[in-house]
Length: 240
Image (cartoon, rainbow, N blue to C red; front, side, top):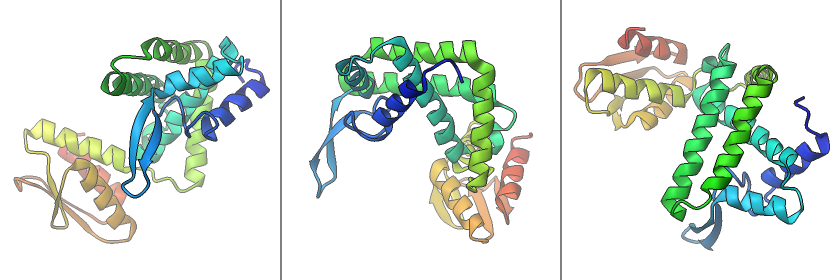
């Protein structure tokens, strides 16, 4: 696909996905250890991306092909993750933008982990991994865009909604910003912040129930019988 040996891609996929390096999705997620099963307490032991580099290095596999394979894994996994949250609609015909957004999202996520939990450790590993993502996009953008299109179709076949809660939550936050209002909404009488309001509304609509969403100041009121109508009416509030 992009000049990577299939055995390299498989090795990296298994390493990241199976927990062989300490945790599922190691690299994108922090390496943790559970302190208490009863209280569900975990302690952050090591930045995930640094742990991934150590695992690759221990197996003598810290070369460029393996790092490119890791970058590819996280890039496409990010697209799939975000699609399940945002819905398929926002990705249709926007594959390049989706990939660019994922590079920035991963970079920000890993840097936040580094500074928040590990006093800036692992920044060099983050720079290397994200650098390979940018190179993949520059050198193989057309192929990766086709991968995004395939992920869209795959998610559609699995009944991933066209409009996800992440998209609705983002739009509700934009409504608050545009109108300068406190960002809380009543959903069928229950007061919720944007993310929770979006999930609640879509859940009710999926069950065939009518939804009424009202801003806390009462100035914005939306009623809908399905997710498409809900999305359209929010866009109308935003003047789009």
